[in-house]
Image 1 (cartoon, one colour):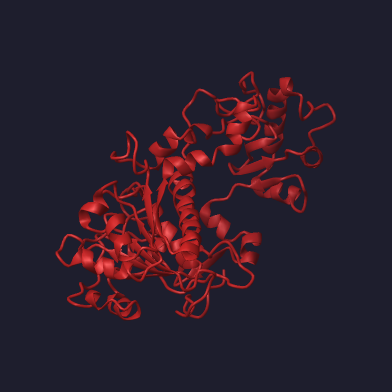
Image 2: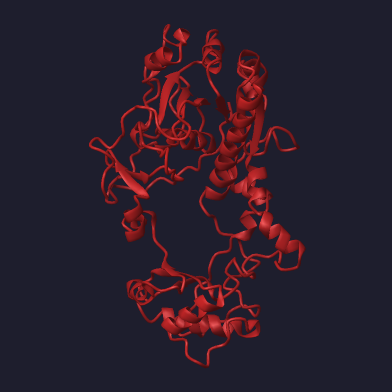
Length: 436
């Protein structure tokens, strides 16, 4: 994997479709920082307002990829001068991101009313799990709870193991899972980042378009429960039309179909099969050598038999051997890779999907633009390291007066700890909107 540039970071000049857009990010964890990172990847000038205390996650700044393409200042919002320092930035900003519980920003003196009074064209983005109103608005939460309530977590079914000899009993409805069993956990991608960060960014950019046309800013209430629910729009239509069962693991796209699911290979690796269309399924059946007596693709009554036959075939070779069989075909079969394995995948390597910066492998900016490409201009910001520079560039001298120095993290944990180190690894903590 080729590094980006000589030092791994592009120069600090402007670039990207959002060049010239100024963003204030009130430091948090999880979806807010990721949304700000995405804006920074696309060229925005993002200033992260860090707290005097170290991050509760204790991440070494060099590995905190969500803070790349940003600059950092440290402001104590509980100090008398703190709110004014942030408002000096707000006066020159286009967008603001905060992820406190409802009412906290107002108590700190940097809520929407105070900020819009200082800058009427500001777009004020609020990133929460439950939203700004409703019975659960004031409660703490995490991705797993938001997606559970939104009806998204219940869609994700674990794949059941099928013995190599195909003798396993599969549910009579032909599913690969127990529809009444517990749902699987897709990390915190569906809630925090898909239903949260990405919807916040869409809202911010839409409101920015309006603000530049009218001069009027507004508040964007981005709730993870709203975004996660919105992701199910197509499935809600299928459910209403009778084409989707309100159970996991029994539908066409959730593992219920034997030609759209995951199978283990002889070495314990897995293959993802997505042979939906008839022509792709025909190619899949040919290369897998299912045989002319195999049940038909849409003979749903015989799906358990078809699933067992497919499982038996896959169990006869290693994942690598099957990759060679399906290479270059339209059978829609791909190896299930780990994150580290995906770094070296031929297709991703050719596109530069992952890049290495200062020894840290990370996704390159996305999506791609033909005329104004995004870039990795800065490494993850060290809290407080850019205060003087931001005070100068943003014309906010109040920041430089008595500015706090960089904040050191608490017990940083790097991503490359030796697997042979003594003791079991500590469980990873899932980011969620902070509570102040």
